[in-house]
Each structure stands twice: as structure tokens, then as C-alpha cells.
Amino acid sequence: MKNRIDTSRKKTPWDNQDETNPFETFVKNKYKENYNIKHPKLSETSEAELLNSIVLDKCRYCDGKNIRKYGLSKNGIKRYYCNDCKREFSVTTGTIFQNDKISITEWIEYLLDILYYGSFSLTSRVNKNSINTTIYWTNKLFTLLRDYQDDIVLKKNVYIDEMFYTVRKSDIKTNNGKKLRGISKNQYCIGIWFDNKNVIVKVECLGKPTVETTKAAFINHIEKGSTLIHDDEKSHKVLIKELNLENKSYKSATLKKLNDKKNSLRPINHICDLLRQFLNAHSGFDRENLQDLLNMFSFLMSRPRDRLKKVYIIFEKALTTKATLKYRDLFNSEKSDDN
Image (tube, rainbow, N blue to C red):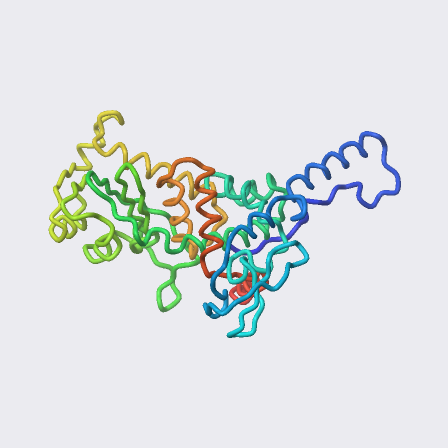
């Protein structure tokens, strides 16, 4: 996701006017009130109380346990001092919230929008954030969810299918600088697996899947002895053999003649439709972020189903995972890529 022209959502057309009529004043003031509700000061929330409820037993920098309390920050958050590495830290040190000037309370509404079908622009407008703030936060979310699918193992009845998603022609070139030709070579093959509880979605390759790409992507994500329900794609057979899977395959030509209710692959077809909607809703992304978006979709579609429980999971992961991303590092990197 490239940075865009950054516009503050706090501004109104009448900010620099000495005089405004009653209607202009009313609109301006109500807009500002709404903006302040969306962007509370940390002192106006229970955020410090929440963060102080997390007890640290080791240094956020060196993991040493020779630490002691070191007063409070200006926002009332507990600080610690490590006697080993001689550094100060707090519960947000080394996390995606480190040095964040914006209240993490704002992440609740942001997550409810971006994890579903709200575009980057829509999420930015609804939450009254600049577009670059939304891009920055989304890259932080990408960082948190990068390993989300690693430990998912699908069981019992497992559906599988592939979806092809177009590569931007300017992004894919041969070694001599010429653009690749052919539909399959200009499309990412996305493998989609579903067991009625969890969804695994991975970029397999460019073009049609092979035994090697399917095996590499999914061999560790399905329990031995499960039943594989699929469209008889040849690359699936390696998993059936190596994992001793029960095989329920259906010819694509036959399925196309059936209405949706009688289609045995209806569950996975539904997931494919939702994935396409999700990617199209976030159409401003760079293809280099495709797997990151697929990780988001997997998180969205997997259990728990409740939206606020997902927000809770993100918050818990954010405050226990060592992962930082500075605003200037993200956008300076993207500027370098553009040059």
C-alpha cells in the first residue's frame, strides 16, 4: 500500500474564518465534537488503567528479570527500569503501540471496519483518520497477523479450491523486461481451505498450481485421515497420498451444470466469493501485500465469529508480541521503492 496525499480529517472549511453564520458555526462545532469523540485523549479513557493492569516480569528489551518500577509516564502509565541493560520501558515498549501518539482506544472502531469489508478510504473517513494513518495501522496489523495461519490444522471434512487473482501487468515482467503473456501467468493462484471452523488462504504460485506448490503450502495444515472434498484438481492428489486422506472429488464440468443448492462444493464456493469481495473492497493494496491481506481474511473467517472477540484477540496479541513499525520507516521505505 503506497502512501497517498495526507489530509487531516479535523479540518473544516471555516477554521480560518473570523466570522461564520449560525449554520456554519453549528456544522463546524458539531463536526469537531464528533471528531473529538472519535479521537479521545488518553486521559479521557480508561486506557492507562488497562495498561497498568498488565504486570511485567521481564525487560521489554533484553528479557532480563532484574527489573524494578520506575514511576509513571506523563499519561499515567507505569514505567520500569532494567538493572541489566540500563534502559527504561513500559508495557507498550517493543510492541506496535510503542511511541504511538494516538490513543489505542481508536483501534476498536478501526479494526471493526478494516477486518471486514470496509475499504481503506472508507475506514479512513468513518474513523476520521488521515488515509496515511489508516495505511500505517493496517501495516501494523499485517505485522501482527503474519504468523496467524502457521499453527492452523484443518480436520474432518476439509474443502479445497483455488481462486485466481489478476496481477498488475506492470508488476510482472520477464528477465528481458517484456511483460508476461497468457492469462494464467498473469494471475496469482490462491489456495483456499475450509473445514467449517477455520479458513486457510495462501498464495501458491503464479499460474496453475502444481504438486510441489500445493504440497508446500498445505501439507502441514490438514490432519491425517481427514476427508478432502475437492474438484479433482491433479495437484491435490499428493496430499491425499501422503496424509492418507479420504477422497471425495467432483468433476468441475459436472458441477457447473448443477444449481448452487445441489453443488457439493457449495461451502468452499461461498468462501471463494467472500474472498473476492474482500480483496475487491480493499482494492488499493499493492500485490506485494497480497499474502498479508489473505492472513487478515483467514482471521476474519475463522473462529471466534464474534467481531468484538476478534478485537480482543488483536489487542492481546499486540501487547504480548515483539513487533514494532515506525511511521517514518514505513513511508520512507515506500518512497525509496518509488525512486
